[in-house]
Length: 134
Image (cartoon, rainbow, N blue to C red; front, side):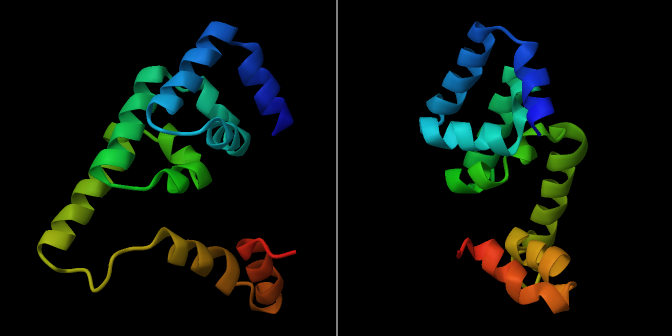
């Protein structure tokens, strides 16, 4: 991860970094939240300001995700809006409109299923790590 950070930050000016940082702040993210997002996904610094703004507007205002969700999953801001995010969102909206979903899809449940439940022998340790308990 360190190599990605050095590579990304090394290729941009301080002015560009500050503009991106201020863009996040303009959406209500604290300095600590911004740093946590960049720590989790250094590639955010390589994404254009326009794409970051479009992604934040979509996830915060259209999808109505809370800021902590973006802080914990910042890579979603790097996904292609036109080819990945919006088409999937539209399908989800049609399914919801036609009441074809029994329950709202949950990223948390999908994560638990994919990364914890399938490793039954280590599930207890994984759950402790997931919950952040020492």
